[in-house]
Length: 182
Image (spheres, rainbow, N blue to C red):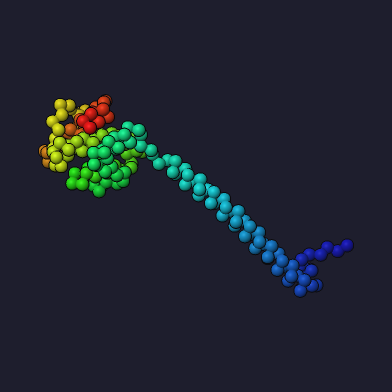
């Protein structure tokens, strides 16, 4: 019995070989399309899973942060969780329109509440100055590690304002101090 190869068959029956080749090509295209559909479906699932993973990593502000944010908003301040207009700032209060920006990175650094406490002191300074920021005259001192953060200001008034904010922010009872003069 003689073995028949495709080449031998194609030589003997060119029309039949062309038909077989066309069927094989069509089958290959169908297989490629089905593979593409499977890959597309898998990639969609991977995209959804990655999206959910990223969403789950968005830090949630802690309860004290939300409580303080709500108290500030009741006093007419707008707390915005977004990059502050001043580059590199973790928090910023613009006294003219009572807007407070909180940089989202503070939640990843786990200093969201401390940052808002700092800005709350500035809000209290605006309230004490009836719209113009002024020191509160607090009888507490900031911790030694906080000194470099306000000492770099060359304007003495700004340095005093920041000193008060850091003084409250660095106290063990900073949340209570920040909310004591509602």
